[in-house]
Length: 340
Image (cartoon, rainbow, N blue to C red; front, side, top):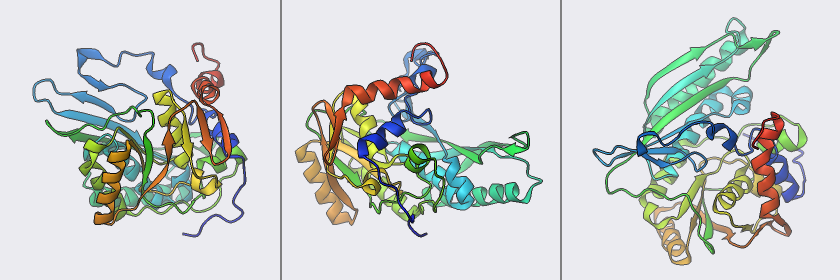
């Protein structure tokens, strides 16, 4: 695929505000706080910190659950969009230290009597099948919902992937809390891919360019490397919508501390190249991880530090408290709900 022509320019903090203030990417705590997420006292990780995780009290095994899809990718390129839905589910589980073991698909499309819609459906299924084969995540169940339209306008193609991963007894669960002074390391390579990105859609109202290619071999290699080094990692997340900037902010918000990223380029901050993770670890752990990456041929780089009370991207910065307030209120405000 070719990179986006006429790439946008925006102050990095303003770009972040456009994302965290959008209902698609704002924190959804209003939803999950309506329900009890700790029935039977087996919950290990509550909502808002990556995949949900529960423990089997008899065996000590833990199961991690996630669901993922990026409909604008599927609309632009059904095959790559289908692959990406599986790959993102794989990364979400792996970022918690879980080994992905199975998936289910929930395929939602418009009227299949229209050739364009049937083409989306077929392409997405082929992409899902290829990704599940390479990543070792068989589809064990699923459903199909067609004719999702309003006044003849179809929904975005939404082949949602639900996936489950296993953390065995004695295996390391990767934590969800960054520690003050932690290094921010990125696993994977960045080209600054902005085609069909969240930034393009939310900040500029543009849906254009090609979707990022999904290298399934890299997805598997990077995921396995992360799990092999899980005991050295304080917290991890995959990079997807919003790229490095949104992932770093979400980790900082969860920990209640600031983050400084070295990059100030829009593509480096908000590009959505695949097969990437952001991890937090101390200096000694970072050295061990980077040494292991060098031996294994895995691309790992330091991209910043966690700490303080500011979110800084290159020379631009804003108080964490200001950004967190927007992030935590935007969803409820958009729907005129109480308790945002």
